[in-house]
Length: 237
Image (tube, rainbow, N blue to C red; front, top):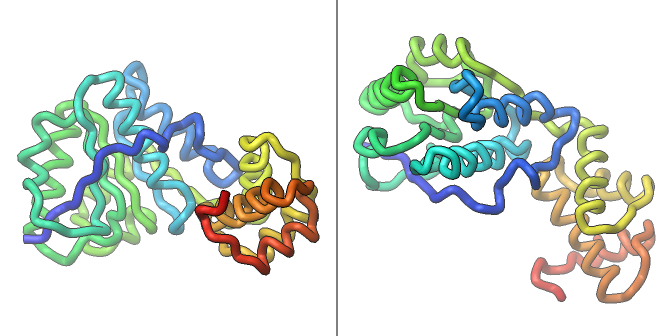
């Protein structure tokens, strides 16, 4: 049977380094609530396009839960499949159920039943349940109707940074984190020449930033154009 592939929570995915903007403010607020042991909310579903920050938030939640509960909170995703230990066998010792890419769950009655059972085990015991996927709960394929209803009982938030204002905020936050200022024309140029994913925005700005360090020049529109033309590799120093 196809199984979940799990990864340890990455230490660099935290709430502090999450790039907040208009398109993800609600998701960030809900994520902090679910991670807070003093908050009664313990069920969250995030949905939105790829690259919008869902995985970052899931791993940030898991990191906080592991620190506060002293229990593991493994990050599980349907994006990969492998013959690993059965999910239900790990549920007894996990502090939270964190499942990403729920839209990729296969059309398999056994897996549907397993996910539903594990969800109930966690939810009935009061342990946090955090899930995410591309689509809203009712649009998820192959999901048990009972689980769809349960997800709608909890907190549900869309994560979307595809609007230009959110992307501008992200770029300015990235620049601020590196203690540099960028003008609006540089921001507009990067937006026009880069895909809408956050990772692509970070890579595009870092290419400009690295070139400015190498050439010891201020970040300007001509420099941004030059960085784009050069397509600098990620390991340039």
